[in-house]
Length: 473
Ligand SMILES: Cc1cc2nc3c(=O)[nH]c(=O)nc-3n(C[C@H](O)[C@H](O)[C@H](O)COP(=O)(O)OP(=O)(O)OC[C@H]3O[C@@H](n4cnc5c(N)ncnc54)[C@H](O)[C@@H]3O)c2cc1C
Image 1: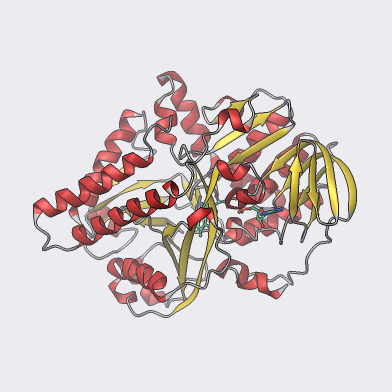
Image 2: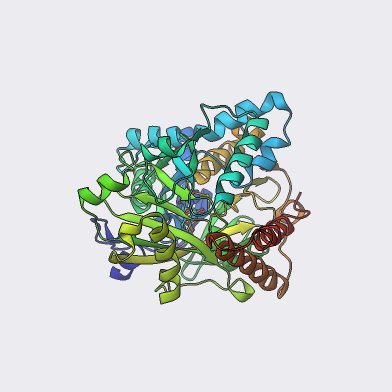
């Protein structure tokens, strides 16, 4: 299926014939049936099979392993979770350190499995640089954020302020004001991880069926057009595609994120820019930017996403001129020498956002359902934790992973997850928020904006941001 080769730079780079694995035909009885061969489904299968090799596990995937966000993301493998500040902040102080260590340990745990299974996905643990450059408010906000992290018990070894001169030693951007550096992040080639994991679980004895879209599910059964999996445990691992498996779509809303990649850049250009150790980087605005220098010396750069009325999925990711233009503008402000660089790849994908703006890992023992999702744009590392956690929950093991505040025990989805508001509330809310963010960015990035306008734009955007997380619990 050559079409799969074109879904992202990462899939395009693979030395892979993309011949689909066989589809599910007829009825198969297993212990654990998983829908979706992205990182969540694959990590869950991996940890279950390594911890309990006797289990019969099957995965049914609508397209091919890595077709979803797992084969398309920005390759930041982070040692954290979306919304962790709120979650960890609510823990008793004595418990916080072990939770931080669990999160910060994610990139190393992934690194360990990569070595053990011989998966090469260009893993480089260079940390992240959260930079302030385009306007002074970025520096103020980053320093406030660092203060908040300190209050939550995180020290210099976890998050460190870099002066402009210190930042320059790692990354040279226009107008640097400083940065926060954390070592708890690696960069990877996402599709190599997804495809490598798929082969690893198959070697362990997991059955993986492709071109096998689940059209219906209920406790104990995943049904496709031509077959069904019957199982004691069902794991829906479809994240951004949750609307396909009602009622999951009430809890995980599809949001789109989009990236561009340049052609490989000369060593001379990289000598000007830096990022020698595979560091990830972002500039701290509400445009949510994320970038990395790929192993073949491209700049891969993503920013802000989109939401479609009714939670409609986007399948055509040929980016419009405006979508490419926004990303080119944002990286061009940081790297003026790249303003006119040739962009060789543009793509995007659907990710899942939970109403509480943090992931959930859930076990509903009565119905035999285990679910991990709602990672927002921060699922590359979180899915590894999700897989480990679901494996322990299904095996009935009490572990550090299963004792975390994002883990929900013994309650059904309906009782434990918060549903999104109906339309048109979601669409109106999303657009109001995004417009306030765009307005803020335009005002703050203009050095001639008067102080009152800057304050107004910031207040409006901050107000909208807190409205978003209002009453989320
Ligand atoms: C453009 C983009 C950039 C991102 N960048 C980052 C980043 O840099 N760092 C980070 O931490 N996170 C990032 N994320 C988020 C991260 O990629 C995801 O959180 C993570 O990959 C989710 O993995 P998953 O397995 O849960 O879902 P997916 O990878 O989406 O897998 C779900 C799978 O389910 C399959 N499926 C769907 N419907 C059905 C069905 N009915 N039956 C069977 N199978 C079905 C799909 O084909 C897909 O393969 C990004 C996401 C996107 C879209």
